[in-house]
Length: 319
Image (cartoon, rainbow, N blue to C red; front, top):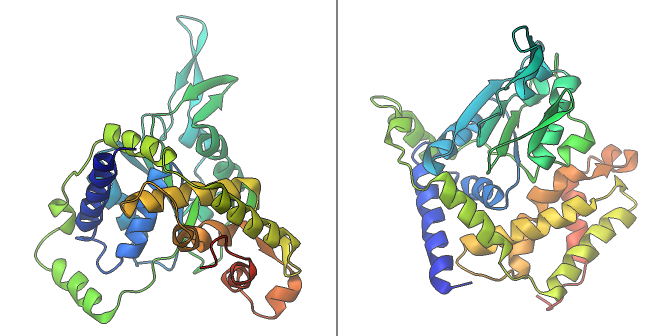
């Protein structure tokens, strides 16, 4: 890959982070992880308490990337046909006519509070997230390229929620938490919303075509065989760990490599390092494992167990 291409992407992602930072103050690391996921052509699950900016990230991202943006507020009465569309009989032509759903003609879909709708409606996104298409009455309809889902959920007030099944959790490239801002950042948030709308100040940085170009560049980033072996050793260790019932899937291993490539590119390099892998590992893998009852009884989290694993796996370069 040409050096000027790498630097151009590095500069563009820095500018995108800066623009989004006008709304999401003090959370540049989270913004960068979301942007990495977009460059890796993956989906994002934002899991946190209400009011910390989950929806704001998706709105700000859509503005800066110049992509067609749509939002669906999930509630118990949302139907699969609201998402993927449905067929209606045309009496004149005596044929079924497809009526598009909310995800058609959408590059960036905000699936807000995805855990507050039925399992059947949640599952309507599975094909779209994996194959970038929807099938209605036996007919497949391609979705725009790129197509990215940013879903939000919070666990406060569990009544009426439907936990995402593991198979669907595995479709998300990363699961991120935003967390509360520090004191200075919160002061900036309050002050910034006294006299103006911060969203109005966000500028479009790139186009959807540019996003596709950056996604293609990520695939060209070099990852050496030793580092592929390192990823393989880590995921294999998760499957053999006595504290884990279900380890990291092959899809998860691929996700680590793609996310690490995006991390490298955003850091101005066309090659992956061990640091890139470790930087993205927990965000990519923590939601992909299921802990044993023993681990849960000991109040261990997925992050705790994965930290033990990555600490024990030998690194290829001894770093």
